[in-house]
Length: 215
Image (cartoon, rainbow, N blue to C red; front, side, top):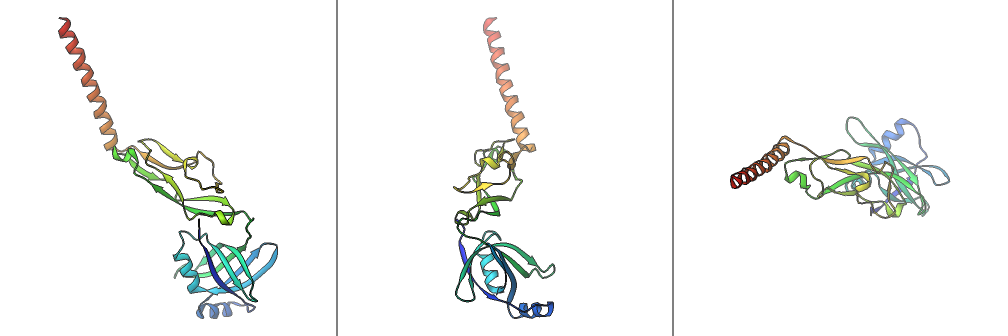
């Protein structure tokens, strides 16, 4: 399951683009916490803390225990990050307040494990989907969704329904959506053709032997 990170979130009352730029120069990122039946709360969080949190996570879908002013805390889900298009630096963060019973929706990375049988025969494993949208409770949020590709032969597919779904986690896509497949390559087609020719040659040889015996 995904790790819950702790992050200090200080209230911010100042507004205006100039103030926000100064806040960022001071090492903070303006943020907002919304949902959970409460009014939106404008806060600022450490830019360094956000960088470290993202570096320690498999995706940007992170559960955070926000340490708020006044000594209270709020479990939240990192919903959105706004980046500077040139520098890539995080400019703003949106958090959704949740509790243990709040179902959340998240994009989780897909990880394929195992070497496909079809690859050993000359096919090529092609991953079509690299992240899947899932629904779950905060306590069940996974780091990744794994799919076992080892049983795939040439021309076979791994679908959403064939992924290894942890308990309490469900996909929003249909069960038949293709996640990965083993494509037929020239090598695989050549080996298949060679196998058919060899089989045919054996049959011809056997037939010829039977005719000679009969003669």
